[in-house]
Length: 270
Image 1 (tube, rainbow, N blue to C red):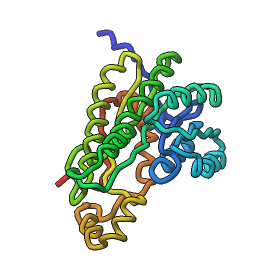
Image 2 (cartoon, helix red, strand yellow; image 1 turned 180 degrees about the horizontal axis):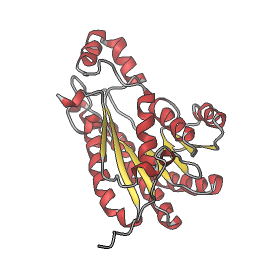
Image 3 (tube, rainbow, N blue to C red; image 1 turned 135 degrees about the horizontal axis):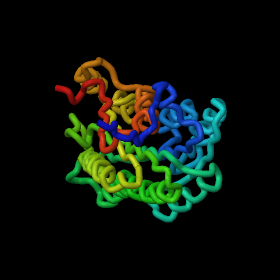
Image 4 (cartoon, rainbow, N blue to C red; image 1 turned 60 degrees about the vertical axis):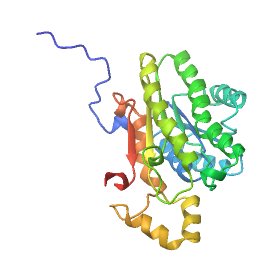
């Protein structure tokens, strides 16, 4: 019997399959927190990184960190919910860094208002950034991937909030957008598979972020209750996303698409 023809690289060295030299990644919401950690992880794996955030105040420091590991960085002050701004950014990345291979859709916003009194403008802003930003960045990145003819990887940062309701949270608006990101991830993975564009999502659980820091300051007992609901006994640290984003960006995951990778310390396992 004739053996089937191999259509993907044979990665004899599994560690080399995680390397990203020669690739360019765009990370939105890269100025701090989880976005910064993922941008630095991609740079550490060998990628040059385009750093985007709504303002430039935090990006220069992240760019310096990227430079320190020997990779190129470019910064872009962009509202990902504005189509023309996103289009212009992707065009500039091509000019500044030469190509685009990886997109990490991390930018997001929320509101603390209970749903019954949530201002309409807050709803519109959250949907425009959290879901609309994924739409716009993915659309323009995919056009670049298709033009280059070499495929690409899109990694959407969803949330366990798109899978389960949040314990004690006034953020049904946020949950709705993250559920939309998960559905969009699965659908686009099928639609763009013929172009060799892989589309996956990471769904973080509770992480140490400015938002959870504010919760700790406001209600320390509830904060501890949430930690107690995590089987691993802690909130995630930004570095806990590093391996996941490199894996999904790299050839190591060349047969992975339409996947929602939950990183929550076991929170949704029971």
